[in-house]
Amino acid sequence: MLQSEIEMHFTEIMDLSQQLKALAKKIKNFSEVELMGKISEMKAGWNSECADLLAGKEGKIVEGIRTEAQKLTVAAEEMEEQAKNMYRSEMTNRRIAAFRSY
Image (cartoon, rainbow, N blue to C red):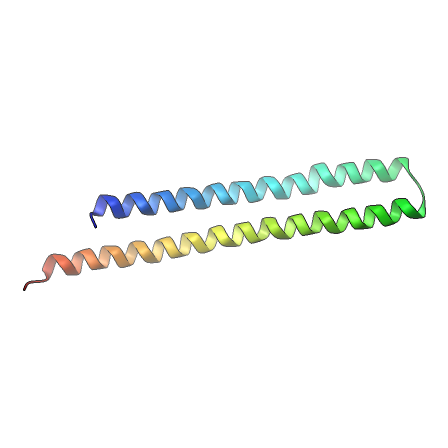
């Protein structure tokens, strides 16, 4: 594989990883700001045991969304680590191949 191809693949994976991280951040922010804001508004206008139960269930949903966003971040970090390892391996293979004689 050519060095330019190796670098291009590495850059593509790193870009995808950054996009995943950005998406995870947007999802997390949406859940914390938008959803929790709506839950607070709803709860303020509706005082009852049912409102408390609903708010509790909605809070669990928001926490689940945050957890999934964190999983996306972890997956992106794993992609980056694997891309770095692959890049180092490919570059090492290229250097070895350059000195190999048959």
